[in-house]
Amino acid sequence: MTWRSPLAGLACILACAGAPAAAQSAPGQDKVLRVCQDPNNLPLSNRAGEGFENKIAALLAQQLGWKLEHTWYPQRMGFIRNTLRAKEENTDRFKCDLVTGVAKGFDMGATTHSYYRSSYAMAYVKGHGLDGVRTLDDLMALDAGQRRKLRIAVFAGSPLTEWLLQNHLMEQVTWYQSQTGDAGQYPGEVIEKDLAGGKIDLAFAWGPIAGYFARNARAEPIVAVPLASRPGMKFDFEIAMAVRHGDKDFRALIDKLLDANQGQIHAILEQYGVPLLELPQPQPSRP
Image (cartoon, rainbow, N blue to C red; front, side, top):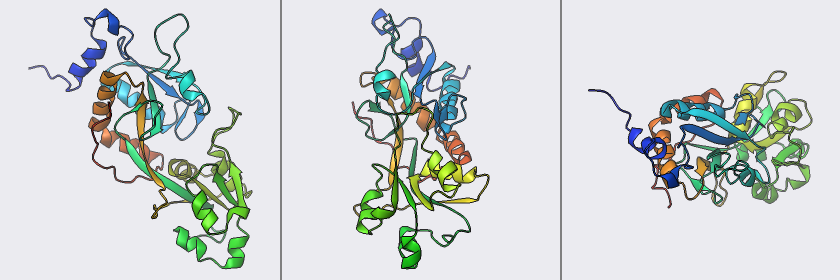
């Protein structure tokens, strides 16, 4: 008896030669997995394929037996418009069909099952007076004089903003933009360059960014501490992928792939130092 992948039937809906003419432009019809990714946003993705989203997309394509192609665009204003919703010139085919990292509940596309859950983190250089800080309460327990001298980096829109406001730390904050107009910039610079270089003392950043650049720090050892959510302050988030709202069969296929390969996906994430929290059981995707 010849073994057949449990995904083969659904993949055939998208890719088999006998599909009706109306579905010819459906994702995967030509056995190509087209992903939309940022060309310069480690540890998530880059053009050289060095990010964990690159590796996970490659894993999905391998499991399907499809070719992998990319549409590169900085993940900032206009990303979805220029990738997932954009068509190749003079064709009915979209440039790409799958965004590999969005927060669960993202409303500009239909989200898949979550494939990891992580939290915001604080990062600091080891040996510079913050080694005992493992929680936000530890930070507030520091000597008031030491705490007032801290130069703190925070991204605009961070869920830490309310906590900083409540604890009268806003005047010490240097604000960073996760979406700038400069394609050469990337969020990880706050850890890799400014924190490591002594420009700031403490950085609050998305955990995968903090964890990766702490693990790969060269000049100075960096500590990245995941933060636990508090009542009324959510610091952890589920991350999923996104497809176009009408691509229900394709989303179902990606859901099955993510569920079937969760072990390999988590192994990839752990290699990148991503702080991982337990995922809830997947709920049926919204139509």
